[in-house]
Image (cartoon, rainbow, N blue to C red):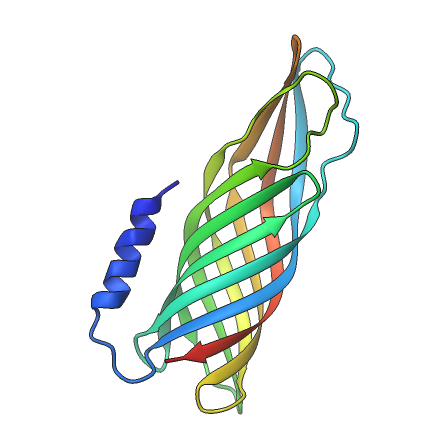
Length: 192
């Protein structure tokens, strides 16, 4: 995992001279969906269950507001599927607009994902390689101010990855790819 990116980013955010209310934290819950592809490399592995393509997500963010129009974030997301849990850490740079009392924003993001197996897709003696991959993508959201320092927001994130997992049973080997993640979430944000 690119923990160095996260540590350097946190240090940059903390060492910036912050004016009043330049930092924010946010928390959101949502639904995630992605594309799953199973490629048989050798032999014939029969899955006991199909890989799930939708899951629940929890998102946490720490952000820094540079101006009325630009801000950046460090985000952590946990996406839970039936058979795996995926952790995602990403950095984003965003452009905010003001339309009446709403503030839509768009941004680009880059980060890394890592997965943890909860349940095997096949019974018996298996070897499943759980890995990690870099991600890149974009996000779009709309937020509305609730009071002086608080917002509610609806956010959509899309990111691509080259995440692959090897499933092996005796001499049979298959490769399971998960990519093109989409996540929609509802959250609250607090400036400090």
